[in-house]
Image 1: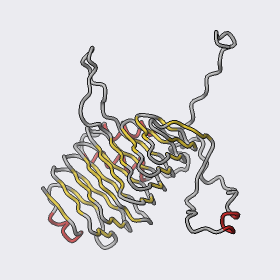
Image 2 (image 1 turned 90 degrees about the vertical axis):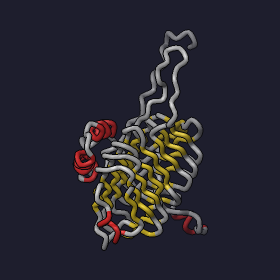
Image 3 (image 1 turned 120 degrees about the vertical axis):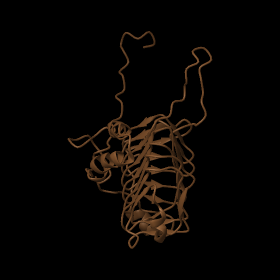
Length: 285
């Protein structure tokens, strides 16, 4: 096992690779642990990682933490051949818990807003089988989150979940294997969309008085409204490209090309499913 709590100890890491400029990254009251080999950790300049644990519990995995104007508070558990990617300027109001298991990935876009007590898990992890067919029912799946999403306090985002850019997940919601379109609000267990056509800003109302409340009754901006365009991509395809690579180095190249170097606004837009019109010949009409 290789373990560091200070960036000055990076030279002690020999079986794994850590790409970090020790003069431009802060590691405060935190620990990075490797129990396998051929893993890669990338931390971009100006990141501050505080009260955090980053644990590689296998081999050939990647963790990529982007530049952030906010502090990272993380508890990451990264197993064999998985990838965890967090894009720039996500805000964490408390420890952000992520467990990437069984060769599945966690991708998180730009400018996310995450409350405290949130957990993401790509696996259950114990196995469940159908009593008749004896086939496994709970296969692990990646978690894919777009840009500028807001996840409320104590929410769970579980295997197979996709959330489009601009959407809101309410407090204590459980998103389990669902696709949440862009610019909607979803709440409950299981999470369901309760409002379409919404956007949020990061303005915080806690200390406001009447004047500020009145000032922000209308927000005349299109900045956080997403739509399909020529740059929109399916996050699932990027996920599959990462999975197709066996080594951490090859996974990292896909992450750099498909996630780090691409920052188009509408890249992770997810369209809402169209409602099926009720037939005029329906028995219930």
